[in-house]
Image 1: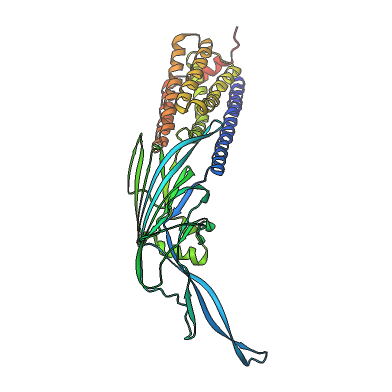
Image 2: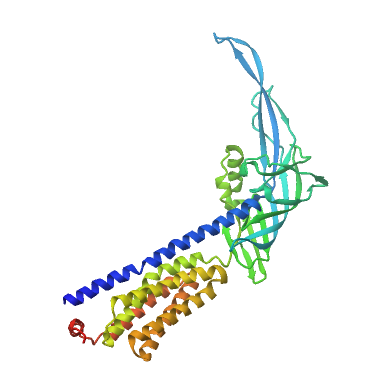
Length: 449
């Protein structure tokens, strides 16, 4: 009994010691993931960052002149002084159409690829307004003078503007000036003066430009009715934002996605006025919709999931050898268990190392084949017969295949993993149901000649 307990304790100690390579690999995986993020940040800094832009906004500045009574220290009126306040009224389009035609490619920082894009952006915004009322004329002698109206187009990373044509406002071609003159994105963007007046009218603004960016392109649906169409040659999109596309078509040649947004659903007018007047734009930015270009070689999430199964992976290897030791009446030393555990743990390090160069699928095949060959050859020296060795190899092969299946799945990963554990437990219980563990314990304690 004492010998049995001693071996059990030693095997448990060995099992937990061989977990060390798993924790080290997990730390290394997180470090490499951070390196990839740094590569993306480097490209964003030198090329252009994520791009986000709303539709054009029509702004009417004004100067309000009013008279203020002056009083002396005794509170008696002594005259009047004219004061001035400056403000503006902003209008969103009634209808907005945005077409983004993205051409994507990869830029590399070391071994890390980063998706970048050039987007040809076309906007058509239809404005319509009644006689403007600032609401500040409180006294008969107050006056209001309207300033130069302009179209503002905020852009999250102004450095990404590469080619821009003059804006078409009705029959006029108008040039842009840097800076959006509105609070959104801290004033980054462009604006153009337009011949618009405060009396009731309607007009259309046509915008055509090219912008570049890194990984992500988003739009804010700033109109009563907004349609956004995004096309790209990149076959790995991830749609994100407050609304998923209403229609989408993804193939090996790229994707096309279309969003339809209504102000009734997004309350965009209230959010815009909150941004424009109160300088609180976070809620407005949260209404964006768009796409992120996913790097298909970004396997670090899969590695994290694989390492979560590492404990189970090593446990199954140990249990398989323990069953062979019990069923075949073998004597396997804890040091040999340690070698088996370390060899199984090395699989994850090989997987991470190869995947950065040749992709996850090929890396998994090479790492699994190498470890399977090593474990099979070593196991043959312990199990003494090729039949036992082939049975052990079959168990490992099934384990590698099931783990790969789990990593490829998302929705059914938990179900597959649970069924695997249940199946292995059932096999272990059925294989040992007729064993007299007391007899095996006594045989284990007998000295070998």
